[in-house]
Image (cartoon, rainbow, N blue to C red; front, side, top):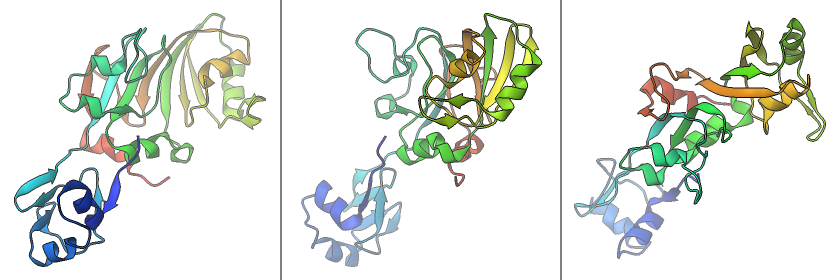
Length: 237
């Protein structure tokens, strides 16, 4: 998930026969193109998605990838697992081996999972400061009451971390099901919040991350994010 950023002279040294000191002359001779334009400084920043061409030879040309997967039950939120099917196993994309997860779901939980090769984007998505809303559909073992809504709105104290959860919106759908919207993602948070009432979560399905929804996406399928959907990771925390 690490983002790669480097000075142009160091990048040239690492990816060509030329030394760091050679780069200044290469720039003066306009032999280096950065994203289609002649390089202008040895200190020019090169990210993992910057196209760099030297003497007509492409040294780097990566494209950012942003995908939404509708994770089925029994699939591991990981890119590699020797014993189980992983989310990456379900992806059909030429750059799939570059992808990592921007948020996880438990083995038996289902729904929206984001994958990308853009480390900076995923860090912004997962940062507590992003306050990015995540919406879940939940079924419970015991009946729900209006008290749940009030307690979730006030926040629930987790003694292990010595924190109180941020206000959450709980909408009761039926006696045993609800829609829950959170702006954080503590360890097993949804199950622990309902555990406050000693009410077991039977199914947990994430239907949305911010404006990104599963509408029309079948279980096990994936799709690229739209330009507007990608922007949720570009908003300042």
